[in-house]
Image (cartoon, rainbow, N blue to C red):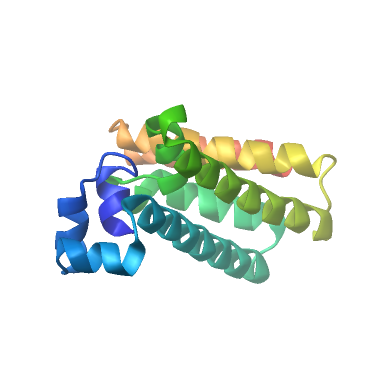
Length: 170
């Protein structure tokens, strides 16, 4: 998953995957049948980890605090410069990679569904849970882009807090 995250879902070579996993080409194909199957498994693992992290954050925080915590983290940590595997995949993949692109879209949909459920279950429910989820995902993309562009950390944190207020008021 990390090799694909660093190199790109479509762009990472089989050789790079072999090296990251520490197995030979024939072993890779015996274990995964194809690079595409490995990519789909990596996407699923990434989404599962993202959902677990969001569940944990929302369980420990109220809605507005959870949104701000996630966005400020996205604005400052940016996963060691890698950004979000799913958002990167949306930018990288094309219709020639239809199965991978569909897996990325499904992963984002799973995250959006969780966010909708959290918005609906909040002690202070939002007006439009679907808009809440969409704004949250768009805000993560925005602040990660600002951080990756090299803007000062304090500015990206401030923007993340502004986005958090917008998202929480949906």
